[in-house]
Amino acid sequence: MERAHQHFLTILLEIRLAFELKEESLPDGTQRRGIVFPGLRFEGNLYSSVDGQLVRRSACDAMILIPHGYSTTKLDCFYTIPRLKRADGTDPDRAAGETDAFGSKWQFWSRHLADGEWRPGIDGLDTFLRYVWVELRVA
Image (cartoon, rainbow, N blue to C red):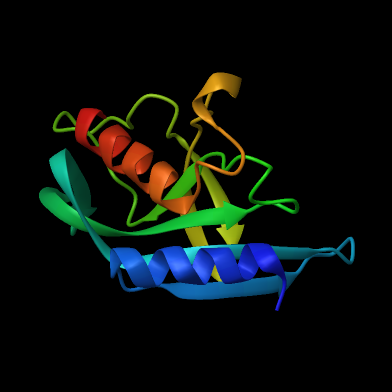
């Protein structure tokens, strides 16, 4: 097992969240890897549409794609199911896109850590998950 993959598993066991490791082949022959957190709980004021009505959410499935070169390459962006909305029914800032991955359609949250916000060898999945929770809270 490669070192970055082992590092991921160690962090996940430490933070005790349910997770699923995913991998799929892309049309160009490369492999895409990701991690899905089913039922990731969060604080915030986000909703999803159920039968045409907005219903407040406190959990969603969240996905983080794992770039080649992790953990020296920073994690970037995240994805959610279901599609999350603000109380007024609009998409959160920079979360209007969709991405097909691992057999599902995910809401794309365009979020990028600044270079100084990712310290190779220090920051990892736990750091990025804290970032995701903050983004969901303030969306």
